[in-house]
Image (cartoon, rainbow, N blue to C red; front, side, top):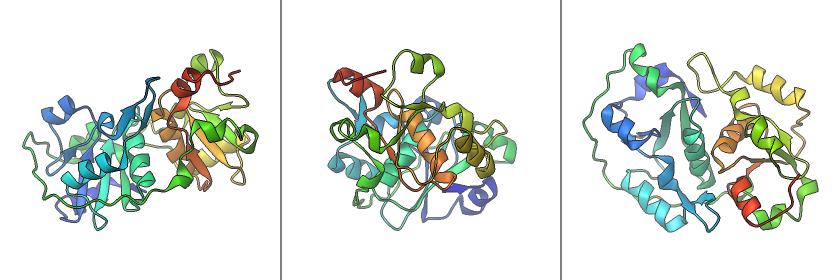
Length: 252
């Protein structure tokens, strides 16, 4: 799932690689990798009546990604920054859509010029393709199902301690997403560190896990940390706290 800076250098002009910059559009326009395209998190979500950030409808997201030149033959490489969970939310979206050739650059895009990459303001026009979603329902959960099966899952809250103390889903365990991100220029801590982090928090690979936060972005980051650590049965509750609270479902 993670690719290195050296790998990116070797595949920067590969026609079968699509580089997507997850930063806000204004930052992208200020300077970006050659051949990279902008895909911000706002483009892959839809808002419900509560303001929660749900995954975009299949038809709309298929058109969006097809216009970026993505089909099943393309390897998608997402670039972003460790403190911004947007790149993780977009990566989870690709996995939910069944696009297995999804990678994240294990480095902060803001650091890439230090590694010899040149940035440009020139916009790249891809050749449109046909993106066909193959929905993976095993990595998403909705509130109607979760509220009836709370005891069947280990529920992890990726928010801050202050948010957690203000109210959280029943039986949930606080693991702020910031505990597993990289602070040395990488997106994430190494697998050994993540293994120990989840072990200390009594999270077992045998459990079915649900991640949530406020809008599903930080929870996507925690979702990927778990996947990097080798956890298989992990789901994202993309409605997260905003939807749960909006529906007046039980809190602790």
